[in-house]
Amino acid sequence: MHVVILAEFAAASGGAEKVAVESARALAEAGAEVTYIQAIRGPVDPLLDHPRLRRIELGLSDVWSLPAWRGAASGIWNGAAAARLATALDTLDALPRPPDCLHLHQWTRALSPAVLPVLLGRGIPVVLTLHDYALACPNGVDYRFDRAEPCTVAPLSGACLAAPCDPKSRLHKLVRVGRAAALRLALGQAALDVVHVCDGSRARMERRLGALRVRHHRIDNPVRIERGIPAEPAANDAVVYVGRLTPEKGADLVAEAARRAGMPALFVGAGPLEARLRAEGAEVLGWRSPEAVAAILRRRARAVCAPSRWLETGPLTVYEALAQGLPVVASQRSGAAEKVVDGETGFVVAPEVVALADAFQALKDDALTAHLGRGAYDRYWRAPLTLAAHGRALFDLYARLKDEYLMRHCGMTGDPTLPQTALSGGAPLGRSHF
Image (cartoon, rainbow, N blue to C red; front, top):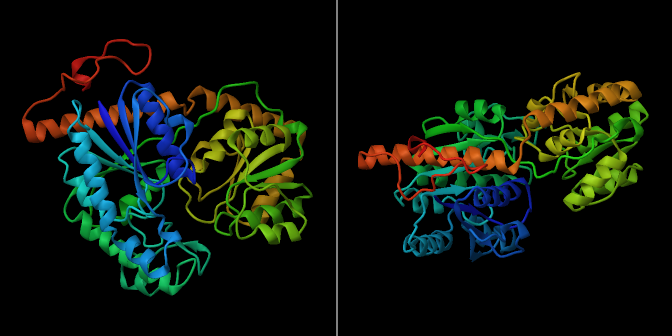
C-alpha cells in the first residue's frame, strides 16, 4: 500500500504536524510505502528518515509570514498550492506503485481549501484528520473568544457571521469566513472521510457539519513514549501545565487555582500570558524538547493539568503523563479527559478556578496522589496508544476504504499488489482484509 501524508510542516510546530509525522513513521514501519508531502519550507523531523518513506517539499510560505493582503488572499484560496500539489501527485502517479490513499492533516497555514478539489479529483480515497473544528467553524476552534466559552451558533449562519468571536479582530473574522465559504465551495457534493481523535469531537462535528457529505471515523492519536518505571508523583511538588500559554487553554486558571490550593505551579511553554504569569511569580520554563519535558514531569509533576476552556480535541501531554504514571487534572471540555477516570487516574473538572483548586488541594494527600499515579500507569499500559497501534488502525481504515472504492468503481475487492503480512509479527493476513 502506498499512502500519501500531506501536512504543512515536517516537524512539530503543533499537535497536527506531530501526529502527521508520527503517522508517516508508523505506516512505514508497518510495511507501507509512504510519501510525506510538506507544504511549507522548514525543518524536517528525523522520524521521516526511513527506507520506505520519501518526502516532497512544495516550498510554500506560511500565510502569517506574508504581507497582510497577500496572506489573507492565500489563506482563502491558494492557487499556487493547488498547482504545486497537483504536480507532485502527478509525479507519484507515474511511479510503479502509485498512491492508494491521500491523507490530509492540516491546511490552514498555506494549503488553503484550494487543495481539496485536487485531492478529491485523484480517483482514490481521501482522508482528513480533524485536529480542530476548521471543517465547520471559521475560526477553527468552535470557541467564542469574545465570551470565553464554546460556540453555540450554527457555522456560517447569520449569528455566526455577526459574532465578534475571532481572537484577533473583525477583519480576521471576515477573512476566516471567506476561507470557510471557499471550503464549502471546494467540497461541493464530494464525499469525505474524516478521522476524529476523540469521541467528543466526533459527536460535536456530526451535529455541526450540516449538509456536507462526511463519513466519520475514530482513531486515537499516537503517543511516542517507551514503557519505563512508573513515576513517583507523591514525591514531587508542583502542578505542571505544558502547552501554549493562552486564556483559552486555561493557563491562567492553573496559576490562580494553584495559589488558592497553596501548591506550586510550573509552566512549560510560551504564549501571550507568559509575562503576566512571570509577573505573578509563577515558574515559567519556556518551550522544551519532548525528552526534556518528560524529564521535568518525572522530577517535578505531582500532577499534570489540562484546563482548556475551549473544546480541545486531544492534548497529547495528557496521554504522555498517564503513560508515565502521573495523575491528570483535565477539563471536562478537553477530549483528552476521555482517557482520565475521575477519582482513579486523576480528576475531571469544570474549567473553573474553584473546581481546579479543589482538585489540587486533594492532591496534597500523598497516599491519594500515589494511588492515582499507579492507576494512571496501569490503566494506560493495558491499552497503550503506541505508534504500532496507530499504524494498525490507519492501515485498516485505508484498506477498508480502498476495498469500498474498488467495489463501487471496479466491481471487485482486494488488491493483489498489497503486502499480505500483518502489521506486527509478520503473520499472514486473509485476502479479505484488503
